[in-house]
Length: 457
Image (cartoon, rainbow, N blue to C red; front, side):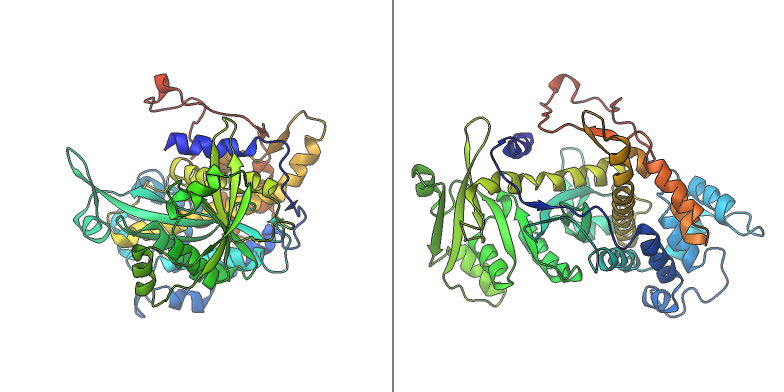
């Protein structure tokens, strides 16, 4: 796994390569407007009715009504539930409420659909990608797609629903997560959580159904685990452009590697029996498709092959593909944020419902963090204009600052809380050092706590 990641990182180091990147720094819709929309959504009767499990739920006057439940789950719950509940009530509860027990919270959350947090995330997508300025490559929104495993808490319900990873000593419950991630704007467009044995390509098909939320021209970037003719055929059928790394045993790749060509358009007139079976499951019949193969050379001289739907060699010369594919590294960074920064695997319950609620709430929070960071970035650029390096928001530190502050913003009409949070995001920005490499240090690979990666939450 490390070798594959290291090789992908090295794709960016050829200074002769050109990447046509359109960057818009001044957004028309600020985070204040988006937060207002989120606040109104949470209070909406329609939203509450849509996202409660039963019509009878949240009708009686309880200690933790619908709105309080949502806000509590958005407050980055990482310590014991009872401690988090006591802290939350002391800050945001009514004076006549002494406390809320862990049992009361668990009963309340049973009434909440996980889709409530997906709908809040849709507010971000709708506002950010409509009448707004955002980063694109040749007018494409660049989407990275990749899957990973989620380690789940041990319970019979989770084992039955998601499956297990067989170990020597025990059966560890695991789920498959797939994310569709805007690589240039650091926004998670869609996430799919399913059984551990579910294939990554099929989860990617589900992303295609949901990328319509952003209603813009997109290009998807995949690693070599997605390389299959039936999958490319399906992407072309849906008018989705792509760049995909191929294994060397993929049809026509070997002969292309042996040639002097840097780019070649292949007309695939037939596909394997396996691909035909997959298309039959989807109710489709294969017909010939044209795919462009492109060579990219790594620092060590290794040649890799990319497949792309971008056939026009004049508009998309071979030189742009090294840096274009390297953008995929952003989704690896995003998984690091999901697993190691916001600790998406630090679940607050043992049920399917709690796992999905926690996952979607954490994904929403990461997107919110990205929007706030984007808004303060211009001020950081101005303050560091004479510095040797460019600087960016410290994502680890800023995530810790979001605790309590997000709830303050969503429960108050005062703009001061958002301004306070923006100012906190400007603290201790980190330098961007291009071309740096981080070789694996085996002597310290088993260290549990890294002094340079202390948690901020």
